[in-house]
Length: 79
Image (cartoon, rainbow, N blue to C red; front, top):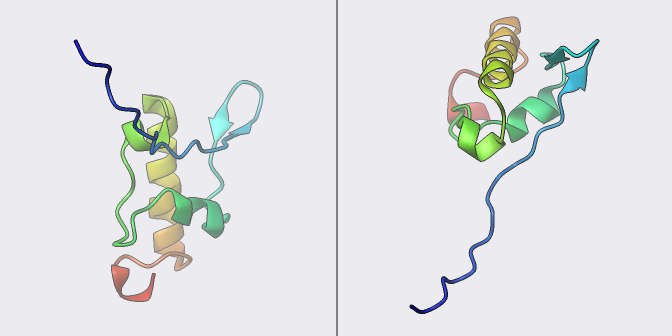
C-alpha cells in the first residue's frame, strides 16, 4: 500500500478566554470573531475551528450578538 500524501491542516485554533473553567468568547472582540467566519460572513464549522460543542455554541452566540450590536455585518457586502 503506498503511503498517504501529507496534507496540511486547515484548522484555525481559536483562543477562548477562561473564566473559572468556563470558556467564553467576547462579542466585542471583532477581529477574533472575523477569523471565525468565512469571507461571506458564515461561521466556520466545529471541525474547522477545533472547538467543542459548548464552545461552538458560545462562538455562534457571540457572532450573533456582535451582528445585532452592529459590530459585524450580516452579509458579505461589507466584510
